Image (cartoon, rainbow, N blue to C red; front, side, top):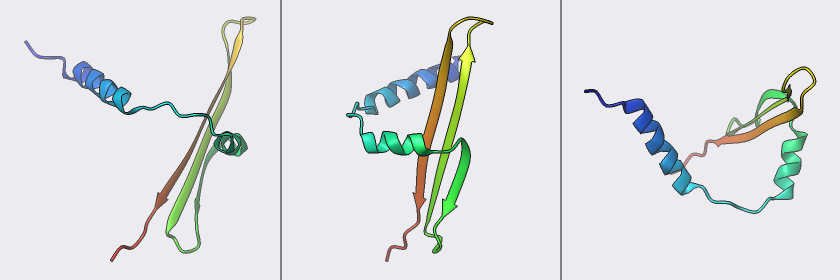
Length: 87
C-alpha cells in the first residue's frame, strides 16, 4: 500500500509554518504604505543595480449570488531583494 506522500507533506509543512508564525502589533506606517500600492505588479531597480524592489496588489469585489452580500478582497505585497558585495 502506497503512502499518500503529498497530503502528509502538506500537513507537515503547515505545522512547521504554524510554529514559526508570531503575532505582532499593527504598524500603521506599513498599513499606509500597502494602501499606496497601485493595482498590478511593479518592479523597480536603483541606478547602481544593487537593489530591486517589487510590489503587487490585487483588489476585487466578490458578490455571493445576484443580490447577495459582497466582500472586498485586497491583497498587497512588498518585496525587496538586495545584493551586497562582501569581502
